[in-house]
Length: 332
Ligand SMILES: NC(=O)c1ccc[n+]([C@@H]2O[C@H](COP(=O)([O-])OP(=O)(O)OC[C@H]3O[C@@H](n4cnc5c(N)ncnc54)[C@H](OP(=O)(O)O)[C@@H]3O)[C@@H](O)[C@H]2O)c1
Image 1 (tube, protein in one colour):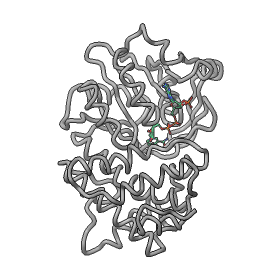
Image 2 (cartoon, rainbow, N blue to C red):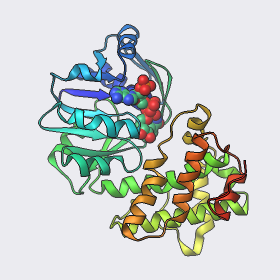
Image 3 (spheres, rainbow, N blue to C red):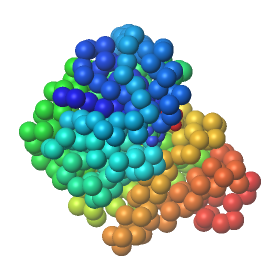
């Protein structure tokens, strides 16, 4: 399966290295010509969980340079905003019946499937990776890629794509892709975003009553939107619907898995990078409004993250008090 990987950052670079070193017919697309030249000169290396792998020689070019070529599979591994911008062009590079596989967090695969149709296949990455420098990546866990049809059910092409990608990384198929996307979204909207605006890990912010209240409100609101959309969220670490008789035990299970992880969005704040908030809490707020589900917490959280991105306020535990007090005014 002739495969193009677009976005050779943490996740795309990790998958690309393992794919090229496994001898798969893979081409790499970067945003700039300079990045493509650097990758062709350096090759790729990955270390960490899953073992080391290297690819001395890679075929890399800026994405527009592929305009006259065609691929059976395009793995889209840019951040969310960039994925939305580049996907229409990528759809023109597919062979008839070809597949555009999106592995961004949040609402990206659903949005792209609404815009581009059935050529889009959805993916959820439980694989954690970082980029040490361009061409050098580290796999952080033994996670896998979960792929499936956005409309649900199993298909022959999902099986074929999974078989192809399995040569590089563990890939599983789900008949309930939307449920898998929402399982991760529920935790991203609560665990990750709350930790980012508070500049604390989940274990730290859950020691305060304010942290616990913000968590409960955002989680419950997000779950209401998921259920109103007709999705049945999958189990991920915990059952998606908290048990009434053991809420504290359910919380402890999440803390056991994610309680000490520094939120990736906090790293985005620290590096001055644009976050994916519009596709996480922002996506939930937008969908909730459309479905008539009240979404004040997700809307306030989205606005707060934008204010942090613009440098108007800083991540701090006081942000959680601000969220409970209402969206404005926020003290600096
Ligand atoms: N990393 C993880 O562990 C992980 C886990 C689960 C899900 N995800 C999701 O996977 C997605 C990618 O995450 P990441 O951590 O790999 O991000 P990343 O390290 O920022 O990599 C994104 C890459 O895309 C490139 N890019 C941007 N626009 C492009 C374009 N038009 N054409 C070609 N390449 C382009 C960027 O290049 P420049 O640097 O030159 O802009 C960068 O190399 C995100 O949606 C994230 O939420 C990541």
